[in-house]
Length: 77
Image (cartoon, rainbow, N blue to C red; front, side):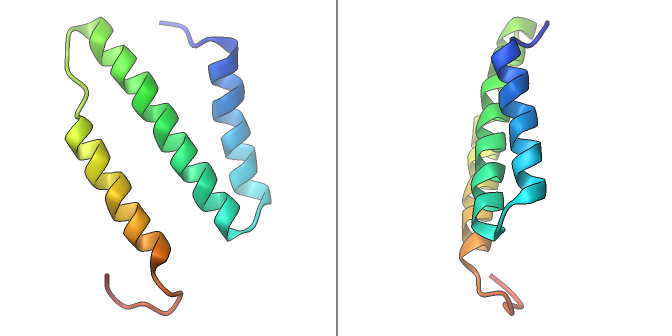
């Protein structure tokens, strides 16, 4: 399976953003990368006759959203 040009541009664009921006933009880029991973993973799983672990994906995203809201000096969730 080959990735379309736009998929590569989106993925590598997110990596560049993560290297050059402030904290909020990095978080936004992370969530966009997770969304891209979900899209690609779903497509690949479908082609392989498997199911994408959507519940795990959703739990990871929910956890990261909680982490994002923590104060910088937080010791726990």
